Amino acid sequence: PFDVLVVGGGPAGASAAIYAARKGIRTGVVAERFGGQILDTAAIENFISVKHTEGPKLAASLEEHVKEYNVDVMNLQRAKRLEKKDLVELELENGAVLKSKTVILATGARWRNIGVPGEAEFRNKGVAYCPHCDGPLFEGKDVAVVGGGNSGVEAAIDLAGITNHVTVLEFGAELRADSVLQERLYSLPNVTVVKNAQTTEITGTDKVDGITYIDRSTGEEKHVALAGVFVQIGLVPNTDWLGDSVERNKFGEIMVDKRGATNVPGVFAAGDCSDSAFKQIIISMGAGATASLSAFDYIVRSQVE
Ligand code: FAD
View 1 (cartoon, rainbow, N blue to C red):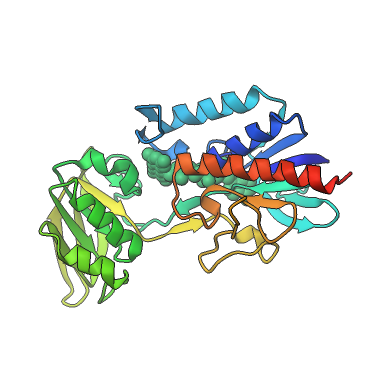
View 2 (cartoon, protein in one colour; view 1 turned 180 degrees about the vertical axis):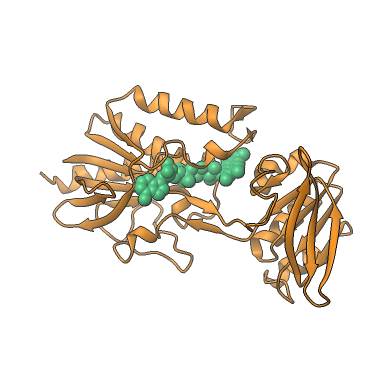
């Protein structure tokens, strides 16, 4: 069996694997797609000490760093079931069952898409999902935020300080964000809130030049010219496969304590799949290291043979 088996090969999983392997214990990584979300990211400018990099480049560095160590990397493999017995068992979609003293869940998350024409086509060409990451790329320009929940309104407040103007498009008749956030939003001079707005298309040629929506109260189609669209309609953790095997919150995020431990002894979690307050590369890496050190501590203390 493994000592530490990591599920997920994004920043959290890679960090967990390196920290485990450096303890000289048997370490494995199962990843559906080694690299994770950063494979879909263009510019990364907030990975501290690296002024600028690109997602695929950072993913390649992660892999290179992991491969410096004796880590059994099982790429293109999807985990489908977890069960705690004496050891923790992990069943893969290909039928194999792996056993380990500890498991670190680092399966990440995915942004919910609107699913309209132009969204996929202009991804990283004006369509963005992370205001902390991509906000500065739209300095002085006009942007829209799709989604009027907490994340959408927070994004709009953040972007209003950087961009020229922000249009918030909310599908429902009211914003769903907390009232303090709404008050702050409405106090800003360069924000327009449109309710009952059903986004139908993100337009552009080589990059985004506007957004089209239907005003659901009148049925009228409208178009706003702008340079960027931030989609903020939810971040979905990749945790459905866990069912009831590990405690999750109402968003499906795996609940962890400050050591990265879940409610199941020997099972830890880190990064975007967990209930961490913020979802960023540097935060995921720190959480992966924390979970890994906790797993090592668990092995030492429980002396599982
Ligand atoms: P992920 O990166 O999501 O990795 C999850 C891993 O688990 C993947 O390898 C996946 O294949 C695997 N996996 C999932 N399910 C299973 C399963 N059942 N079995 C096996 N493996 C599985 N953050 C920043 O800090 N700066 C930025 O500039 C930035 N820009 C971003 C731009 C975009 C377009 C996106 C989408 C995100 C961006 N982020 C940015 C956020 C950042 O990418 C994430 O916070 C970070 O990747 C989370 O790391 P993670 O390891 O927790 O999860």
